[in-house]
Image (cartoon, rainbow, N blue to C red; front, side):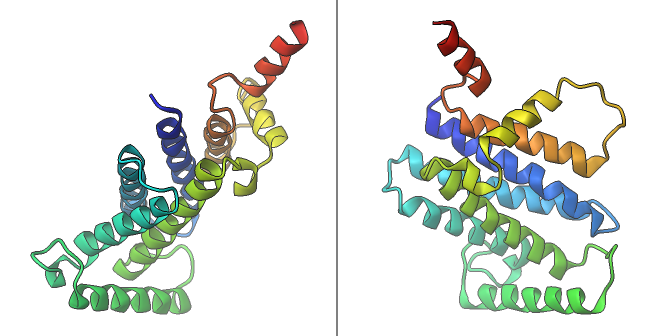
Length: 203
């Protein structure tokens, strides 16, 4: 597997895990499947763009196009061209859904039901975050700028071997998995940083 492919997948995986704590806002987990599918659409578009060896600046645009296509198919297919392609009517339907979601944010208190507008807002927002994380962690090779430095990432990796007492909640477990996924991006050679340092010291 090419390094860029592995890093693209790791960045998407880290974003998917980082979105899990949003479950505290909803009263069901219905939203998560739409959100993870949005991440998958962005990652697939990034992988396709890189497999075609498009210029680096086009990769985020491909991710945005993949996200838009996903949102149109899922939330506005009845107004889309042949049910698949974005059209003025489909874009208007998405805008109406976004406005409805913001209205729900204003009117409802957590935990909220997974309304169509809120799920659209969540999926679209996390999809945009996926594009940003890919740019920072993969294109720029700066995973620390995505929110965690190498020390924190290695600390998260070490914490994995500690006894599970007290047992962490879902948010803490997702955070630890998020750090491990970002560690994969940090060490593209496949050799953990602490092992690389040990080998260097041994030599």
